[in-house]
Image 1 (tube, helix red, strand yellow):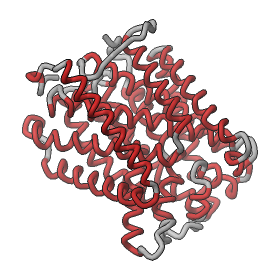
Image 2: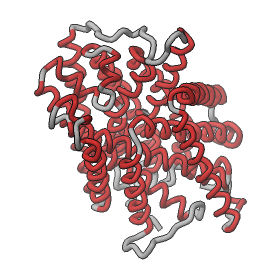
Image 3: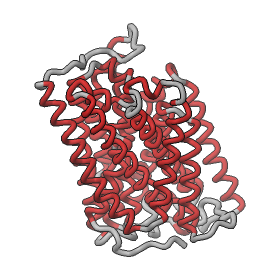
Length: 451
C-alpha cells in the first residue's frame, strides 16, 4: 500500500510541483522543437498550446473538485470506463508519457550543462555523444534520491527551485525584450523547414504539429491531480493549483518565446534547438548571460524531474493497488511506492540514453493526446450529468486534441516515420500486455463510478 502523508502539501507546494514539471519541460526543452516545426510562428505555438491545455484542464478540474485522490488520472479513467483494459492502458499511456518527458528533460539538462564547456558547439564535440546522456542519467539518479528523502525534502527543494527559476526566466525574458527594443529577428511568417512549395497547407500543418509538441510544456498540470490524498483541502486546492500553474506558465512561456525571437532568427533557433535559450542569451548580454541561463536551466530541469517522479510513481503505485497492472518487488526493500519510484527512475534513465530529443518529444505528445481524448470522451459519455459538466467544452477539447494530434502524425509521417512506428509498437505492447494480464486476473467489473 502506498504511504501517503495527509495534508503534507500546501496549495503553494502543489503549484511549485506543477510548475516544476511544466517549466522543466517547457521553454528549455521545447522552444527549438517548436521552431523546427513552425519556424517563426513558434511563440504563437506556445499560446495555441496553452489554449488546448486550458480546454483540457476543464475535465480534470471538474472530476478533482468532486473526488480528488492520489490516483489522479487513473481514478478518473476508472470512473469513466470501469476497471479494465481501457482504464489500465490509458493510464499507462499517461505514465509512459510522463516518464518519456523525464528523459526529455534529462537530456535537456545535459545539453545545457555542456554549454559551460565550449559554447554553441559543445554538444557536437567529440565526447559529447556520451556525456549528454550520462549527465541526464545523473540527474535522474539525483531526483530518485531526493524523492526517497520524503515529502518534506521534496517540498522544500521545489519551493526554492520554483522561486529561482520563475524569477530567473522572467529576468531572461524582460532583459531579452528590453535589449532588443521589441524588434524581432525572427520572420513570423516564414514557412517551416522542409515546407518547400507546400505553402499555406504546410505552414498550417507545421503550426498544428508544433502546437501538439507545445502541449508537452503544459501537460504537467495533470500531475497535480495525483496530489489529492496529500494536498490540504483538495476539493478546492487541486483545481486552484491547476489554474494558477497554467496561468503562470503561459505568461512565462510567451515572454520567453518572444525574447528568443527578438534575438535570433528562426533558422538560428532551429540550429540551436536543444539549447535555444542559452544561444539567445549570448547576443543580448554576452557570455555572462549564457551562464545565467544555463544555471536557470539546471534548476528548472532538476525540479522538473523531481516533481514528475513524485507524481507518476504515486500513480503507478495506485494502479498496482487497483490490480490493473502487474507488480513485483524483485526482493527490493521498502514499500510499494518506493518500488514504483525505482521502476520510474530506471525506465527514465534507459530512455535518456537511447532516444534523442525530437523523438522523445513526439512520442510523449502522441501518448498524452490519446489519453487526454479518452478522458474527455469518458466524461462526455459517462460523467457529464453527474458532474454537471458542459458538453460544448468537452467536445471542443476533443476537437482540438484530434486536430493537433492528426497534424503531428501527418508531419512526422513525412519527416520521421520511425517515431510513428515506435509509438505504434508502444501502443501494442501497453494494450496487448494489459489485455493478457487482465484476462488472467479479471477485475471486479462493478467498480465503475466508485471513487
